[in-house]
Image (cartoon, rainbow, N blue to C red; front, side, top):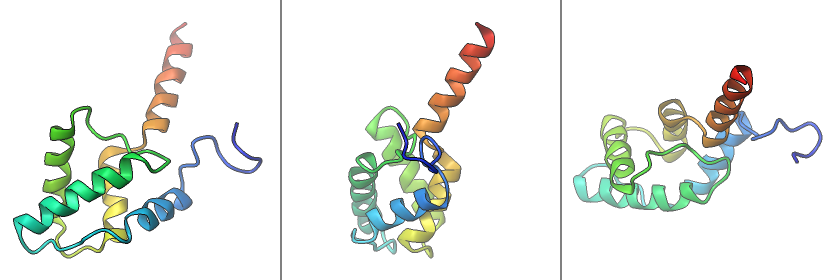
Length: 108
């Protein structure tokens, strides 16, 4: 289980910080399509393995498309500034799972 004092799933400001730290070193050049593609590839690779996990679309292609469009709309943002945008857009897999389970148990 979660260590005392931590909410299960650990989603909060520290989650944002953790994700921002995880992507801090990736290539970040959003001026052109090549740079955006590179950033998307790296973002997906890093964020897939970082907990708490963001709830990306099932198919990698769909996830890439969605991330690319977010980056294009936020070219002026730094990696740490893009994380809150991702969190708002995708949410956390853990939270969604818990919500779904709560719904199930409410119905049962």
